[in-house]
Image (cartoon, rainbow, N blue to C red; front, side, top):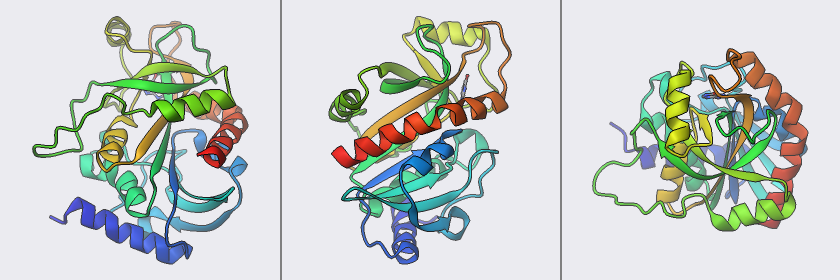
Length: 264
Ligand code: HPA
């Protein structure tokens, strides 16, 4: 088996060659529905299909584009991943974190993870972005192997959360649960999550945050509440609604991300 960090290094070299940018400063992973926020970030100077880079499996979900863009934002160079690999796709945990490992190998010191999620906390409204303050892993699957006892006390950078709230004081924070999926949760499972202190639930972000932090990157995660979690309103959950909520909130999200990157 290829060493995962060596594979990430070779993907980073392929990105440097394809984009003609030797080092990127920051990477963004755009989750379900977040693709439309990208246009507010700026015009990409180059775009590479993930399938043309070492180690990336083909995308499986509608709304996940599967390419990587290089965008100049202020004096920063951003590497923007449109699409990600999820645990439920069955490619294994190494594939799930290959993108963020590639981003760090490409020079990124800051990793911004975005996602679509269900709102467990009834204070959140659909279409509202929420900063991830902490997480609970309900998959129990770690991207780390061996005796790497990485501290996760400040996994979701307090500095970056403060910066985001300076830009948008209305931003709330919450605890995100990683659910493997691909089925959404049952109402009973959502009730359990609420009892253990969760505010948000989704199928991504957590392994990527851990892998990026373990490599020394500063991590921020921001969730777009695309629906009330199962059983909260009695409505059924629908992937197309998740995508539509993302489209509706896209420009607000793009402007926030852009301002944040210029202030890093
Ligand atoms: N649960 C899990 N993942 C999700 C949800 C949800 O309700 N909405 C968007 N992604």
